[in-house]
Image (cartoon, rainbow, N blue to C red; front, top):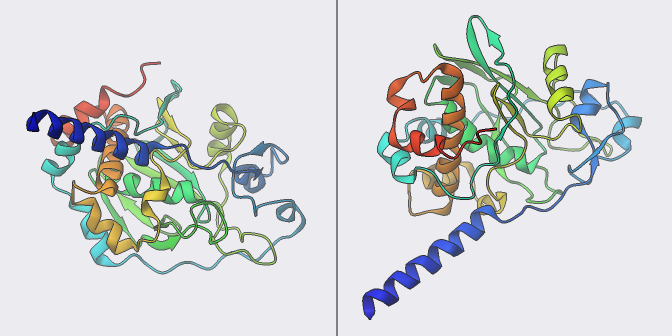
Length: 295
């Protein structure tokens, strides 16, 4: 009887964790940040931070200054997660949101490209950078990652995160293209611009997500256009706290971030032809790959 009660309590706890990690985030309203940056599809309405309103069209704020760099301890914690930890998390039901768009893989220098487009103010981008940085660190090395947070006056305010603005990435398996559209601190009612998508990147946006949703993460065959888990689980935390929690599989942060990282890794492995095998053939990644959409 006691064993049955324990099993019931464990299942109830698992259901509760699933609801915390995957509950629907609040909707955003406003103008597409990608449309505003690209200049070709202004006026399309999507869900983004409420503060980004008509003033973005009326003013031209100065370019944002770069944020500070991520502490070395944070980079180390997310870049050195043991394979056994990834494998223990495996595939997490409800985590993800990747779509199969059947796209063509971009190449750069003979290597497949992962394309990320987001903005520093965006809380959903903030949440998704954690598993993306963790996944990409399995294939290569980042230099000069920025430390930032989402906007203070948006949903899920001050979500701690990385910034790809002026960061570099080296890998023998793939190339990374990143576009951080705007900063996170409004100036006269507008978020200052950081970067713009180039013509090729803008063409992909218009083809696969003309509303300009961010984050926009393109893997060729696969596309992610939202946070893969609820940003609320990062509320009130610092970057070092999140990074330490990632390595503790008893935390919600570890389950969400590593569960998503396994799925993102599986999408990347589809581009790299399964290389490196030590990553792509690992139990955690192969389990997550089974949850990638077939069509």
